[in-house]
Image 1 (cartoon, rainbow, N blue to C red):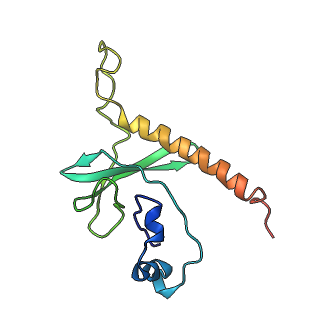
Image 2 (cartoon, rainbow, N blue to C red):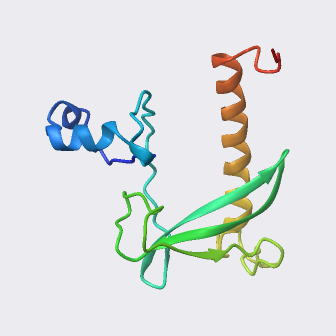
Length: 142
């Protein structure tokens, strides 16, 4: 899969021939026939001076685990899934980010793990709607 960062749609018109050729062929010399344009979400998470992004695994509607993907040489708006990245497990079972009893709402540290799970379930729901809209007979096998 070829990944490139574009910050403005005008950049697509100005791509050099070298970049177009690079993006036109992926692994094993296969030509690219389809493109996905996906918006990126900047991450403010950092671990050990490296930009980090949470990756959450779900099974059915349940969050079953995840990890932080970190890359010390990438910026907040760059793809972290590249050589040099490292991974740290998310501690869903024993989070110390629970609201503190007696504290005013919003005063204690946020429960990021719960928030990641909510976002993952919303993303899964959105993906199911998109799949249904693009292929409503996906369950029909030939």
